[in-house]
Length: 413
Image (tube, rainbow, N blue to C red; front, side, top):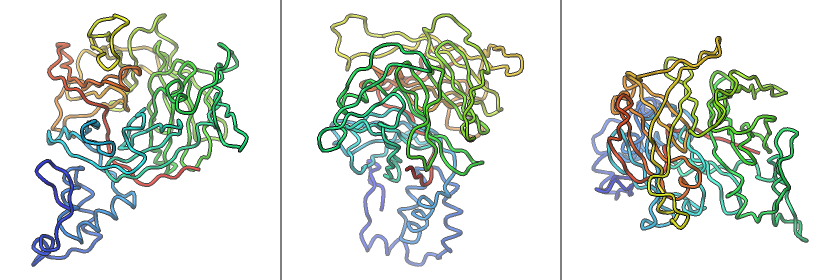
């Protein structure tokens, strides 16, 4: 395979491959995989296209799960004009676009509800969840939507799921009457945001789901056949997984921790709700120093508030970003005025805080943003870059959500 001028991957002819390989020193596959494992994705893709032996090492590296190098985040998006099976990656490291061809089910028929560690989390037309690796094309089905606590399947005469009843409760409190949805409409009402985390101590992955009613939490460990509900909390907006603990932040700034590795999952309140009203978008991020950061994003509709506006024309405008260091022992927030050498990524994907020393292509003391208002982000997403010290937008581009990293093989069910 080779890269065309528009950076699309194509297969080489036998003559091209022979020309590249002729006279070259054949390295053992083990050494080649060690070398390739140090490359970022664009360089890895190119290296895998050099010749058959390099492509073999490239394939072994991805399929074995040995490729663990952290990546400079890429922007993933689709384009209607490119076809239903095509997607694009914009490399922030290279400032170049790569076209990808993904297998069925067609990516444009799916809802994207999250991105982390190189995986996209998607919901298909029957509201079933999958994780997709846009680099390798690997797709893995997650536990069925009918195993989520608040979803009750309704079967037809042949025993197939025809509709679902969405129960309206959290913890032990009922908040309304249940209502029935067809499978293609269930994903509109149920899913909010999803994450894929790696637990090195267990050697497996965890998928965490924020879902309705009222933004509750459920999770599935690799190998699980059903979702596990995490009552009694609600109103969650973001999650992070650190040292075996799942941390979740509420819309009012409360932070809860869950140990999901034991036989019984218990919730520990790290910090009570810090405000009475939740107008800002809330994020929780781990800094490279190990500190937990609470980030508030004040945003509003940028192009009017008339009820007649087309949702495809709606964009959100971020007016201010506020960052606080979480004092775990004292249960207090310490305001952060500058990120110094750090950079934030916020949006409809896993929240990240990276160091420009490790990722020199990024801009220090900047925040990279995508829309993450659920009703807007599904249809029309704008990515922007903020200078933290001046609250100023330095760039805007219409696109989708951020992907970070590449992972190995996963198995559910």
